[in-house]
Length: 326
Image (cartoon, rainbow, N blue to C red; front, side, top):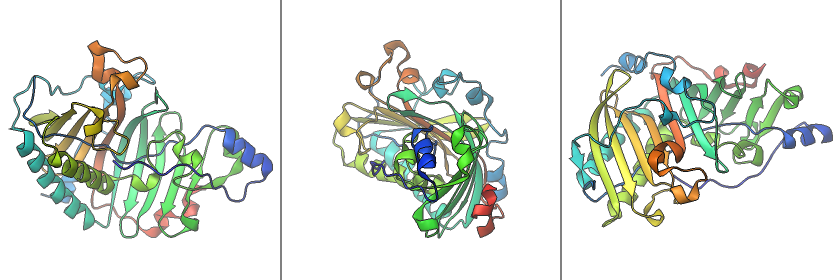
C-alpha cells in the first residue's frame, strides 16, 4: 500500500465565508483501496452474470449490525486461526498472487462495473463508522461515481473523471453547513479529502485493490524470514472463498509504506478470482485502547468489502457528470 501524498485543499467557487465553513466542516470519507497481506515462513502457532450475484444480500447484516465506531470483526466472521491451511508460506503467497494476476487481467479488460462497497477505516487513532457506498466505475480513463447509503455521510454524492474538472473530484454534501455551498471541487489528495480517509478516491476500486495486493506480495516474497502466510478454504456469505492470512514479526517487514500492518486477511472469491474482502490490523503498541484478549477487534486499521459486483453494468460518461450531483 503506497503512502499517500499529503494534503492540499482545492476549493473552486467558494467565497471567504464558504472556505471557512468548508475548512471547519467534517471531512469526507472516501476510499479505496487498498489494504494488503504478507508471508514467507511456514505458519507458526465463469459467467459475469454469476458474479453479479456474488453476495446477493445488498449489505451483510453482520457488518451493518456492528455498533457505531466498533470494529467490523466484532460481529461474527469466519475464523482463520484454528483451521488447517490449504497452503503455507511461499506456496500460499505464490498461489494467491497467481489468482490476483488473473483478477488484474480480467479487470483491465472490464470497461465498467458497479458494486456496493462496505468500508471502515481508522483515521488519526480513531476507528470510524461503517460506511455503505454505491460504486460505479469506468476504466480507461478512470471515472468514479459514489453515493453514500449508510453511515454518517448518508446521501453524499461524489464524481471523479480522470482528466476533467482540473483533476479534482466533485462532491455534494447533504448535511451540515457545507451542504449550503452546493457542489464542491476538491483535490483527491487534498486536506479535506484525506482528513477522514486513508486513501484518495483515485485509489478506489477492485483494480487498484488488486494491484496493491500484488505489490505487497512481491515484497513478501523477497523476505527470507519474519513473514507468516497461510491459504485457507472458507465459506463467506454462502460463497466459496480462499482466505490468505498473513502476519509480520516486526513493523519493518510490513509491505505498506507506512509499515502499519501487523496482519492482513484477504478473501478471494474462488469463482470470479476477485478480492471481495480485506481486513488489515495494526500493532497494539501503536493503537490506544488495544486489548491483547481481543487483539484483532481492537487493532483494525481498515476493512473493505465489495458486494453485488456486476461486471456487465451498463454505464456511460453521463453517469459521471456534474449533473448527477443535482
